Length: 266
Ligand SMILES: Nc1ncnc2c1ncn2[C@@H]1O[C@H](COP(=O)(O)OP(=O)(O)O)[C@@H](O)[C@H]1O
Ligand SMILES: Cc1ncc(COP(=O)(O)O)c(N)n1
Image 1 (cartoon, helix red, strand yellow):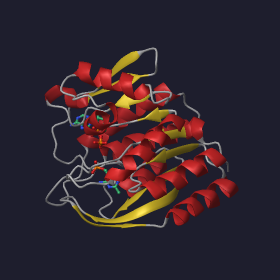
Image 2 (image 1 turned 30 degrees about the horizontal axis):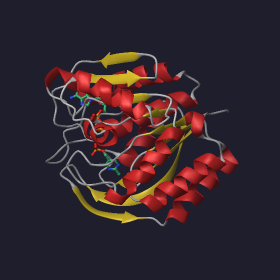
Image 3 (image 1 turned 90 degrees about the vertical axis):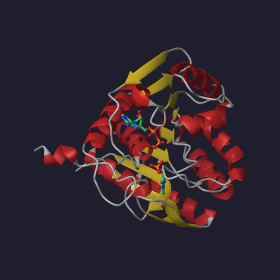
Image 4 (image 1 turned 90 degrees about the horizontal axis):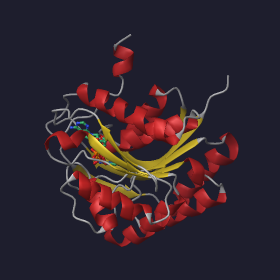
């Protein structure tokens, strides 16, 4: 049987809410064969990140080479990459295997619980990876850092999207999960020509760990399925909203999303 494949290049979250674990679950829900290149291992739960251990950059590149050279990959996302050495290795592999057209970069910098997930010195490397991608998906704080624009309103999100677009990426999605009130459900899309406000309802829950990882993994899975980018983004946003509505009340802090709600509905 033929099956599309998708690759996540990201960190492991021991609590299973974000990172590799959320990504592989999201790939599976899309009936796409999931593959992983683990960048680092976090000891993490719903309350915070207790420890981070990086893999050597060569170990990350080797994982990418192993799967791409043998199994092929139709959709790729990057998540937590922690340091500049890892990002440089990932960039070289993406270029060597010409994965740019199917690459989604989630520029992970800070966790929901406030832990730093990217070294300060690695932001420059991340900025150099972004132009390779077909889509970059910064949240409010990442968009502020990447654009130098303070974001308080939807208009600010638009201006930030426009600035980040000038990096050379094909499209930008500034995510609104960290905005206030109804704006939490609003993401801003900009592809160089068109702005689009992608609106869903704002879900009232503290169990929102892994929303960004799930969104970018779902987009990569839908790219692997052959959907056009905009359709992949819209469908993925709707999936995240439903998964937030079914989020799991686990732990004392921000619980994980209910990724498998479609299976429970059957
Ligand atoms: N409370 C919420 N209600 C509705 N959508 C949300 C909510 N929180 C996050 N989202 C959506 O989840 C996706 C991820 O956004 P965000 O949480 O900002 O990313 P990140 O996890 O990178 O911080 C976006 O599509 C955003 O609109
Ligand atoms: C391994 C890993 N990758 C990404 C995130 C960001 O997810 P969130 O913003 O929901 O904390 C995380 N906490 N851990």
